[in-house]
Length: 309
Image 1 (cartoon, rainbow, N blue to C red):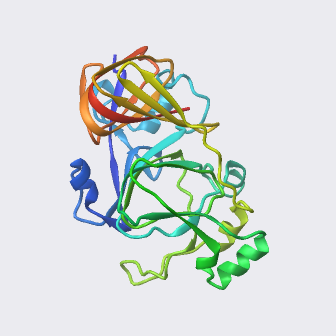
Image 2: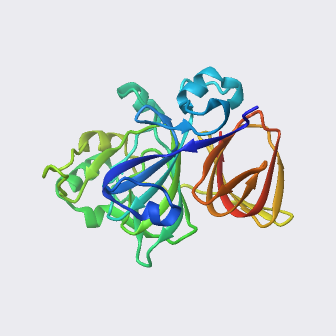
């Protein structure tokens, strides 16, 4: 029985990307500015394939459709989560994502709540997280007048930080940050501002200002995260967030960890190496533990970001 599915990542060229994913994780990248690793994705814009066992070569979306028992018979048309690694060699655009209600009414996609675990950050690195406007009219006016310094809220970040980004939050990832992202399965980005940059064709990238203003939460409110810590022998588990969209945890394994499992889980090794149920794993590996796995045995010294619904 093929109970653990190792996933072949898909790499996306981005204006702000580079080659750090090769240096940091040993990925075989094309010689382009690669900004995103879609590590576990069933989205139509990047549908990853299984690279082991009897399901080898199958896309996650096909497997989710035809082998629903592997996923606790989860009731959804689409595989619910995506895992990415973002390598920001330059600032990303100022953007915002819609919630489910808006997305389903206006697009063919889902809404997009997401969260970030900061894998690395330069000393002066920061994100944009939120805004100062008190009404939609004020937001629209400040955008039209390019009052970005007064409108946007900057937040310094460092390695090991965790940030939850609810739908409707104006945000951007700043230059010099690498992060792991867990999100709803969606690829909707409404850009407010892109620093007047030109793409490879000498054109400015499209903005979606009207849509962005419509979906932005006003006023901005920082969500309250109730981080929980669990020490299980020599393994530490940090639960960063648990909501209707995802639960995200970091498992720090120092020698071995045995876990009784009751659901499918998405797992990304962000440091170290070891074994999972006898399979060798190392930093940069991504896999799905299916619902067939009743018992997860981890051996080694490694940190794993685990997400599930």
